[in-house]
Length: 230
Image (tube, rainbow, N blue to C red; front, side, top):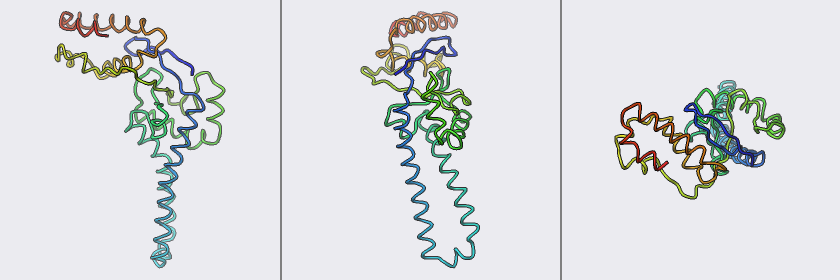
C-alpha cells in the first residue's frame, strides 16, 4: 500500500497508509449489503401492510409511495453520513477492513466533509466513476474525496497500543493544556509509531512542538516527563 505524508495544522509531519482499491471496494460491498438489508426490511414492512390493510393502501397510495421514496433516499444517503460521523470516519464496512476517512490535513471529518463526499458517492461515484478514479490517481481518491478534501487511510495493526492518558499520569494537570487537536495528533502518532518508515522525524517534531508550547506556558519542567515519553 502507498504511504503519504501530510503536515498537520500543528506543523507536524505524520505518515499514513492510503487505502487501496481492493480494500475500499470490499468495504463498499459490506456497507451496500447492510444498507440493502435495511431497505429490504422497509419493503417487507410495506408488503405486509399492503396485505393486511389493502383499503388503507387504496386511500393513501400516492402518499405511501412518495414517503417510501423519500425514506429510501434518506437511508441510501444517511447510512454513510451517520456512520462516518458516529464512528470517527468509519462505516461498518470500513471498520471491518480497518479503514478510516480523514481530512487532507489529517484531522477528523466533520458533517460538511461527510455530507459532500457521500453526496457524490450516491449520485456519481457509485456508477463506476469512483472506482476508475481510485485506480487512476496516485492518492486513490474518488470525486467525492476531491470535492470534500478527504482521503481514506488504512489503519495499521497496533503492536503496542499506548494511550495519551498513560503518558499523562506523571502530571494530570497537563491535560488542561493539551487541546483536542493535539490529543488526536499524539494518539495517531502512538498508534502508527511502529509502522512508520521514519518515525524519528515525527518524534523530534512532536518533542520540539510541545517543548516550545510548555516553555511559553511556563510549565516546561512539569511537562518534561511527558515530552521524554513521546
